[in-house]
Image (tube, rainbow, N blue to C red; front, top):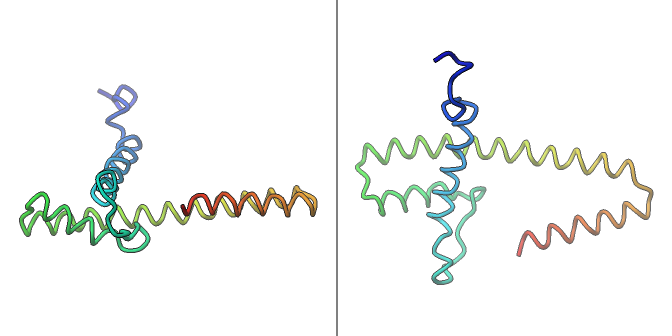
Length: 126
């Protein structure tokens, strides 16, 4: 098959995001799935060192060999680097969008907009 006839699921541009979503789900499930049964102590987020917890959890639950653990650590390092890069890009996009909106609004609208943004951020923290 030529590249024009290659199924879309074999395309690297499709596979990389799918792999990222799959790994995200795996990590989130490994770190956060227990809250459905009981309330565990707060777990570090991806920004706070969740990689180490994910690695230890998967190592224990899957009974990984030292070689597998080393390979998994490399995979998680790559994933977390990719995740943080994307997060930084999203933060930049959000900031740019807010700046553009602020330039569009008058003073009263800006105050209301800032209030709305604050309320949204407060909801996300809870």
